[in-house]
Length: 270
Ligand SMILES: [Fe+2]
Ligand SMILES: [Fe+2]
Image (cartoon, rainbow, N blue to C red; front, side, top):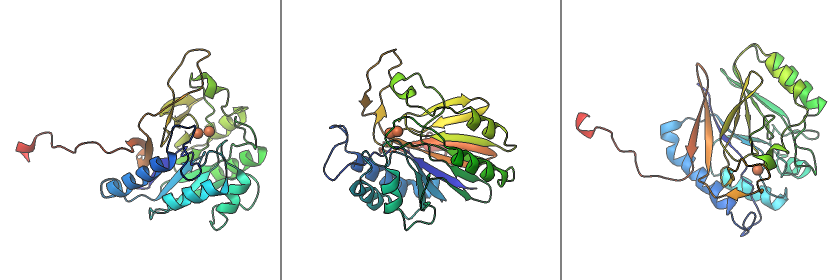
């Protein structure tokens, strides 16, 4: 049974800097890597990790190198798509040794497991915060789905096409997504859309498609549903998702921090 970890929005910044003056994002990603290493006997084996964008905060080479150094402490294959904070060209250069990284154009890729296919799509537009899927990416999705042979599919994007009620994020969602929805809805197998960008674990409907937005690994976008709410982050506990095949696609949230336990509920009965 294939098991995939999804980590989103690490926002790595330059050495010894804090993202937005508040968040030690490298420390958070290191803690996440340590957590995965520690709980691997309980949750593994893990087939791969997918990073759903905003790997870095400014898309600088130095930031990607820090990212790679941290993540490659884990002996688990990983692949990534860009977010609005990434720089596609720099990302392509830094990951040019990786087979999954296209040499040019949008960073779309697909990978097949026995019981699951992952199709990852680049929604980033250079210099813009919102998301958009170019025709080349929609064509890539169509052809990938046609070769999926009705097995369960995870489609991954950075920008979610759904609205969350967090106004400052909703104006940056995936725009013009009707054709995207039509293609996804036409698939005959089980399919789940997984995204990032909002830094909160949110599950919604994109038409008939279940869409899950991953939590941030280091900080959250503040939960403020008021109209005109300011654009804020909150240092809530970071977490990540584990997607596995259990009949269909089942998704768990795992917190990065360590908490006391496990404690047997009924030690006397063991
Ligand atoms: Fe982000
Ligand atoms: Fe983003």
